[in-house]
Amino acid sequence: MSSPNSVQVLNEELYSQLETPGMIKNAQDAVNEFTRTRAREDGFWRKVIPPVQVANDELDRQVDTDKPVVVVDKEPGSPAAVSLPFATLPINFYIRGPRYRVQFDRIVTPRFVKDIEELRTWQMDIRQVLSDNAIKDILAEEDSKFLTAVNTALVGPDVVVPVSGTIQWETIFGGISRDSVQEAFKIMPKTPSHFEVNTVLINNVTIREIMKWGRDEIGGDYSQDLLKNGWSEIDFMRARWIISIKRDLIPDDTMFFFGDPRTIGKAFLLEDTTMHVKREAYLLEFFCYETVGGSIGHTGGLARADFA
Amino acid sequence: MPGAVSQMFEQALDAVKGWPGALHALDKAAPLDSDLLEGLTSVPAGRVAHINAAGDFELSGDGTQMPIFLWEGKDHADVYNNGTSPTTGTVHWVPVSPTGIMHGLVATGGFELQTTEFDDDLTYATNDLLTADANGILENGATQYTDWICGVCSKHVNSDNQSEGLGVVAAAVGPVGTNAHGVETLTFWSYFLPAAP
Image (cartoon, rainbow over all chains, first blue to last red; front, side):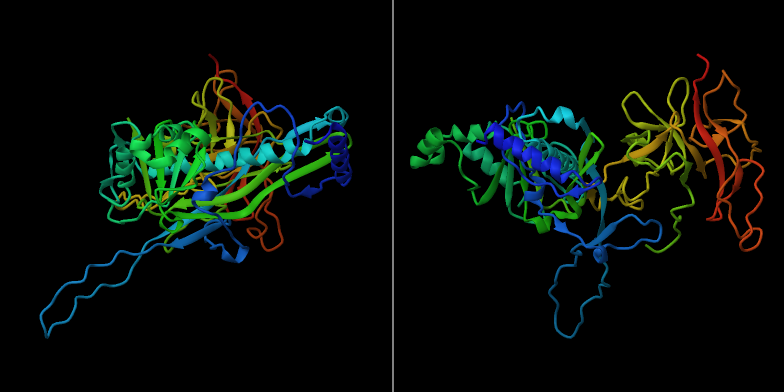
């Protein structure tokens, strides 16, 4: 825990860094104590599909726009092999294949403005507010856009996804039990893509349904550990579990399933999160921004289960 | 992407005065109405729009709806990445970004604007009042205190310097003229006068 004096020193360091008007500095983590009113967390989109930094020469130029675009190749379909008698040749299949676009937009926080004389009375580390919350709000916007796209790709609950011909957003009855969770894990490999679940996304309330599992469901001392110590597993059921507090995005009693990132799509960073800080006379202004792009190129690596 | 393309300046809005100064400009960002975003209706840059009760952009305006001049079109790469095939309706990809958010310049801001999106069959004069048709295309002939007014005609600027010979700027007498891209534009000041109730 930082003392108020040390925090003031940190703030003074910040003031000194702001002496150059228009200065832009990269956002950095900082640690301090103040009363939190809302929990924030790191984003999960970047865990499900780790974004790749894109350089200028990796952008695909377009005729009709100068806005950045990346074109990604997608595995083409190919006809099945067939059995033939001797003395004949195979039919022709001219090679064509699908591609998809990744386009970018900018995520920004509001531009915060403050008279620096009023900042002098703050004892909390102002950098905490500048960097931590703002960056996590940007990550929350990333997550929101990602899950909106996932829900769009999965069409709707108990509706056949046209591309796969199977239901990939399934209502599973019987609550969250060992059996029902296994049923949920079957959604993805049941598609023609046959992908296996790599990552499970669940909220911090729903995970407690699994922590309720007794010895008859989870077996041995593990049930005792869950009750005594809570959920500490990252890998469980041969998948990585991400527990999120974003219940507004991940409803209770819902699990999202993701395959290997290569089976889902692409996420690109054109400009990673940057904090613009500017002091003009006695007015301080700052905001964070980033330029990211992403597309879901295929639905085979996605599934969702709503437990009822 | 073989085939016909529209160049980025063919349907566009320019702010010849008053913007950028982007950090202080009176612009407004909002999603485009989903029917417009996913439908066949063209929503190019330079049209006038308003924000509806749902908080989304819709074209044109009426009553007290604040005119907002669209900086982007819905087909811009930072607005919408449509992965649905127009041929088969197959969804080939779903964009995580962008999500249909556009932005425009609000009519009450201090702007002199230049748009490609106006009815070029009409004859315009400086100081004509501007309104719009249902698609957000500017037109004159509006009646003060009766119609929804979104601008006042200015005088053309940024002329094509080749139509009169290389290096010679075409004389502009009214608000309509050809810009440096060879596209006919209407120059006007943004202004808002609500329609009579």
